[in-house]
Amino acid sequence: MSCTEKNPQDCNIIGSGIFISPKGVLDHAGSVGFSLIVWVLGGGICALGSLCYAELGVTIPKSGGDYSYVTEIFGGLVGFLLLWSAVLIMYPTTLAVIALTFSNYVLQPAFPNCLPPFIATRLLSTACVMFLTWVNCSSVRWGTRIQDIFTVGKLLALVLIIVVGMIQIAKGHYDALEPQTAFEFIKDPSVGQIALAFLQASFAYSGWNFLNYVTEEVVEPRKNLPRAIYISIPLVTLVYTLTNIAYFSSMSPQELLESNAVAVTFGEKLLGVFSWVMPISVALSTFGGINGYLFTSSRLCFSGAREGHLPYLLAMIHLKSCTPIPALLVCCTATIVILCIGDTHNLINYVSFINYLSYGVTIAGLLYYRWKKPKLVRPIKVNLLVPCSYLVFWAVLLGFSLYSEPVVCGMGLVIMLTGVPIYFIGVQWKNKPHWISSAVERVTYLGQRLFYVVFPQDDPSEIQPLTEKSEL
Image (cartoon, rainbow, N blue to C red; front, top):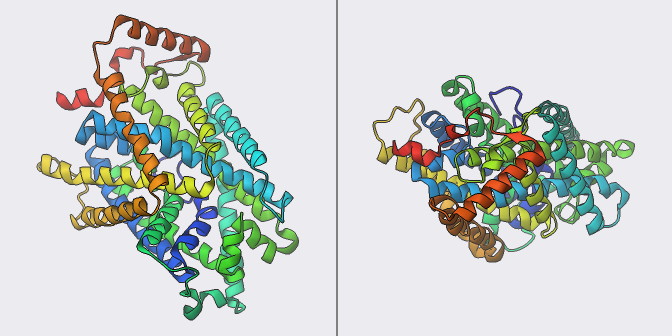
């Protein structure tokens, strides 16, 4: 999706979520037909959000995505809460889900008749995250090359699934896709369950806003941001829909819901002696996905620290390799903690709820910014129906999701709100006692010695919070 070069998140919108979410979407949607509608509409909602982000990207041409826009529009507190939730919830949870998927697909062939052991999946997931953290700490080039190479696995798996599925349909194997069968509900549908189905699908589509994290690096953003949206979103929606259609060409809804690794089950049913290709391809895909999210999450940590919203140690890079080692280690640690406390299905609902919450706040900011600064030059200006339509869907989705899963979704909301006292104590409180400032300085100095990191600028005083810039 990206218009930039040498960025590991270029292909993240076609992500590992397509190998994870189909089971959750079908479970909550209740029927094959409804699940396919959710996949198509999910792509349409992403398109609306992407157009809004394109306007924000050229109006506020700063890297950092949601965090930079919300901080500029609403001020430091709201921006910090978005950053706080991203660092503690969004990115670590997404990394945990992808890492668990990686371990499930690697281990499933060894446990064909049962789930892989809990300890085995967690240990393998942890080892994978730690290894890729080490790679990204060692060299930016290594991380980029891993992303380029392992993207091939992602595309290979999807192409193979779609082609084999279309061949099956051409042979007449489409019983589950016939209208009278496709809309037979496995369980009674409800608005709350449909909302959760959209949350599950949104996990697969996450990545549509990643281009805004590197806006300053995009060549001619006025042209390339909309071009990326018009090409990528319809293409990804088509690929995801065809992938799900292919699954149903060989599996009944019950078989898909019972499968712990949908693509592996698909391969075992249709690829015969070549079924080993599927788990390897998906493992490669998820491996690359972890790498891409590590890159992006560490960059957000790095940006937040530069703005004074996180400890300045996180804004430092290695003296020789120029990698943000402290930020990468924070992301790695948070991911390993979350790996130990949740299952994949609940983690997806948990992170998707917070993701949608941040998207909605950002797009509401677009409307507020138009009212606040009506004469500001906007190279891209979307019709008001676009953000309004998105926000109506957003409000309904989050309301019914919270109603259906109050504990899972509410937990993320509570964790986000814990950032309020942290902001006032850590960021807003300027005249801290000398012993606190000295302790922070000692920890920063120790971190610099331990990780061999420095500020990327010659003069650390060049770092200036967004809130201060906006007041000038």
